[in-house]
Amino acid sequence: MTDCDFLLVGHGIAGATLADVLRARGHRVLVYDPGQVNSASNVAAGLMNPVAGKRFALSWRAAELLPAAAAYYRTLEQRYGQSFFTETPIFKIFGSLEEQNAVLARSADRPWGDFVAALATTDPGLPGVHAPFGGAWLQHGGHVAVRELLAALAAEGHRDGWLRPEAFDWTDVQFDAEGATYAGQVRARHVVCCEGAAAVRNPYFSWLPLTPNQGEVLDVECAHLSPTQVLNRGAYVVPVGNGRFRVGATYRWPPFAPGITAVGREELAARLTVVTDLPFAVVEQRAGVRPAVRDRRPLVGPHPTVPNLSFCGGYGSKGVMLAPRLATLLADWLVGQAEIWPEASVQRYNALQPASVS
Image (tube, rainbow, N blue to C red; front, side):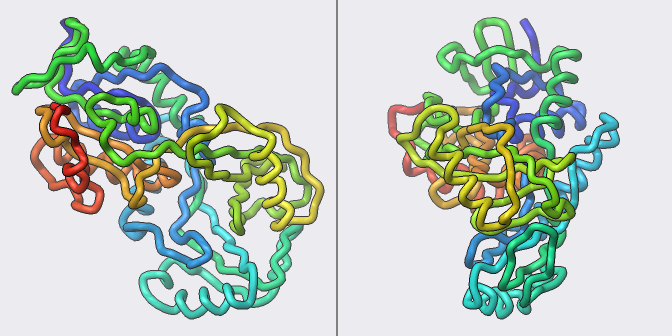
């Protein structure tokens, strides 16, 4: 019988960061993950954006989440001797004078102003960038090489034996007041579901308001396009080095076709032509399925009726920004040192749980 403190199911950005935080605190952790290369975390561009959308909406808890995420990824860089996090300006391109005026008015207020480094009311002349109405330079954001980061953590897990490249069978777990037993071979004090969009099929959490949302991204080669910042207008354009850029992302609600689509490729290519009139070549296209929540807030915390079972996920398109701080929060809660934030707690949806789920 293998004994552990915490058994985690899933090693995307949510599960990987939680496992890492728990292990750093000396807990015995065992993770099950089948290693899907097309998971949402592996496909994501890893953008950390403090402000998003045409309404210039400030990302939820951005002032707390962004520095926590940056510090965490820097720590991983030192551990592995690899570059994962690029802190870079994000240039939000104004699409009209009306949008320019709206952002100018809002950016003068706090806390928006803390994330605006500069404003341009005319085209700033970035190489290859079409911005006739100017834009806003956003600070304290950047992008994370998610696929490479997860690969580094997974390699460590496989080497040290705490990450098992296997699918987890929820019908083979038994919970009791002291913990859980899995397949008659593993004993854990607590189990945490970190399955992402796959949780919609989880017998313990299928009642949560998770909706799979498919996103596609393109990697393109575009010579002479400015690589010194992330570009954002209807799509993000993230420089990934050597004249390549990651363009994303589409949003498809069910039903959607599995894998990449010609429609997704055409949509993203059209969005890129709004940002630049330079020629580009598509070199790769990928698709993943995000775990979206109706109120666009994550889901963290205990199952309402099953002892020693919790959930960690529902991060949508903001996983790299949310995961480090929420991993710390859940790790603290698991040992009785913190309360789950009400706006992120699973408990806000407890009324949706069917009576038969226990």
